[in-house]
Image 1 (cartoon, rainbow, N blue to C red):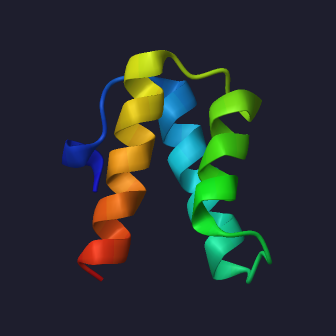
Image 2 (cartoon, rainbow, N blue to C red):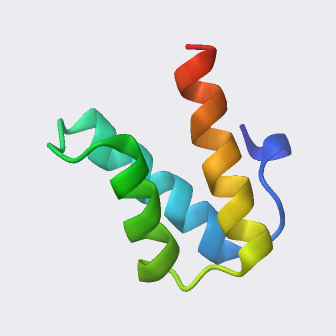
Length: 62
């Protein structure tokens, strides 16, 4: 998975945070979790777009 991630600790923490919440059965829809992560980790527009695409791909191609 590391080769798919762009450089930067914030985006890595955001991916981990969303993934952990999904695994723990967090009751929010995926898009809500992604939006929360974008604000929580203060992601740049580029990183926010990456995070959206990363999890969209996971939903489409499980």
